[in-house]
Length: 216
Figure (cartoon, rainbow, N blue to C red):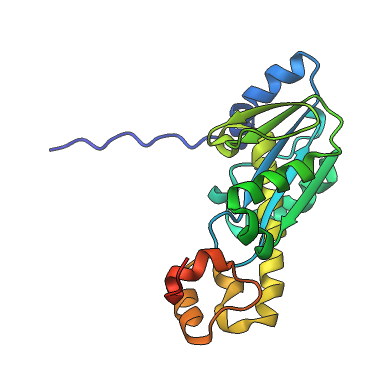
């Protein structure tokens, strides 16, 4: 008879906070003022790409922060006002579909990251993956940074909630695409609606040509 594997103990909120601030604690100990930058919305067929830059001092950390993709919508919405209240610096930036089409999504994301961080007056910015940015201070790029850094995780939540709220508003204007549910991503429902009704002004034409049978 096969013995049951011991259940892995769930990490407590305090343990998770300690693990997620490992990078930050080293920087704080050396006297640095830091912020995190992350983006949401690089992949959707519609809507803006949104970035956030967030700096929270070590004595005002909010429990429960994680990579926004690992949190439920309800949990993200609950954390958002707490993060905004705790932050010394919190700024978002939208880049709209027309500009995404004109400059491509990577360049649009870089511009949004640079814009949201432009007024930060600390000395280190932790960035989720993207490199080659023109920022006001030293930048450190971390692959999967939203799962490794508290500041990047906080920025991912702020950016995600900000963009999701906008997509719900957009759904009221263009209800046929289901933006409140799919947030502009290419779900089967969204693609079917796109083929039936054609694109609206919120669609990224550079993303949907293949779906509509258009030549690039």
